[in-house]
Image (tube, rainbow, N blue to C red; front, side):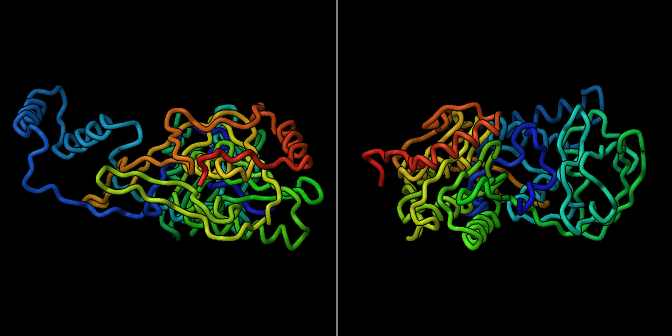
Length: 391
């Protein structure tokens, strides 16, 4: 199987690491100062801050009060908008770019331990001798017991060239490792042949490299053998950036709308279209979805379903139909702010509703699911009927 899964993301997803779709490639939207307009009851906020500073049982800095106020302000809007401190802002940008400083290991939470699932070739993790199945027990002398994924990811990542010391366990053997972080590419596409003529492509996230990786995967497969059918797996894929989802869906469509985005009126609805030319020449496609498939994954699934290009197999998807954009603030901080809604080609919003599969199946039984997908492809029915309003 070519490629590798997203680095430092759990195989069992513990919440949404990055579930963000933007209308500008997760590009930074312009910050528009709201000068001259008082948006908050500043007297009340200032009075509360003075009372906290004077009477709270512990000392609290002005910076902490301001940060907490920002977090509360964003949390009160919706569940996807939030304040980003400098570390969060940098991490989110790195996820979108597909590059970061790290060690090149994929971790899974197994039995309560952060366990190495795989390592990238010629990565610091591989050169240091980490093997699949190894348990990471401490980072820089700090035990990982009870730690959250965000802390582990943040601790393993860092500027390329900086040292890192880990302790690990392999069976009954405990040992230490010294590594030097490097610039790591986070591949999001892996592929193989299920059997002669029938290809399998799994997409684990959507970053700036995903569209080209997907097209390269199809091209590589096609040079090995004609593709009679494709299984596209987005189970567990919590999303990524909009242009990547447009590129993936666009590679399988011969033109047409992939999705539309509606910002706050009076801004007109914006359509994102697929280019002419279907990379598979109309060969049938089955898309595997589940309850964790969200955001950019749902854009791909919805576009292929509405255009009658694929059969969706699995269970109803997560249902995230809002668009977030990065808004920069001073101090290398920012906001992840909901700035619009997206719609399928037929104009449907899937927010809090999800996309229903054409054929319901247990998404957790991979072997049975792939066998069923192959049966659909061989029957030549790897396409649903487009709705009358499809355009």
